[in-house]
Amino acid sequence: SEPYCPRLVFTSSIAVFGEPLPAVIGDEFQQTPLTSYGTQKAICELLLSDYSRRGFVDGVGIRLPTIAVRPGKPNKAASGFFSGIIREPLAGLEAVLPVADTVRHWFASPRAAVGFLLHGAAMDTAQLGSQRNLSMPGLAVTVGEQIAALERVAGPKAVALIRREPDAVIADMVAGWPKAFEAKRARSMGFVGDASFDEIIEIHIADELGGKVAL
Image 1 (cartoon, rainbow, N blue to C red):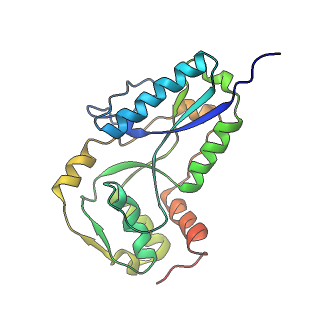
Image 2: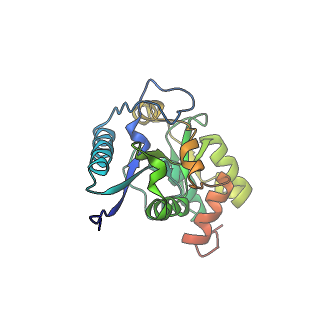
Image 3: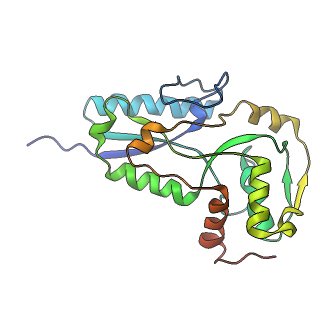
């Protein structure tokens, strides 16, 4: 019998890509991380591919979009405001927005992320060939579009709790992050993302707030 080869699903990140970037990143775009975090993820992607080639594991690398709306309390992550401007107002709390409404980013809900992992664990990896790492489907949405979705779902009182407080350091960091992906390979292999940012907000309300908004 053939030796046992365990399935390994690795949670990578869109941080493996850095400027200069096209407006929409294709599946064959070269990894160019600009942070230590992104570099570490890229290293693990290479090891995953090599160990799969050698038969040590049957690997699937999943590059997660930025996850929103993240549950819990605010943290010091530079990307935290993307969730904060939705999560805090839904809880009746003020949120600080450090960047312009025109900033665009790539998102998926926690529910979609779990779906990516489960599908990666069950899929036929023969489809991957030697390219074991995939950029996951997501939504390319501006901060302004996030806020518009919040107003549609929770009303103007929620939007009124967002306080704009520009932070040049965070704005400079965010400016170099990926904004959109094709994710054609992942979709062709059965990975499914969110339909809209309204849906992402509704998922947070259903999964984390018991279906109720504190407004």
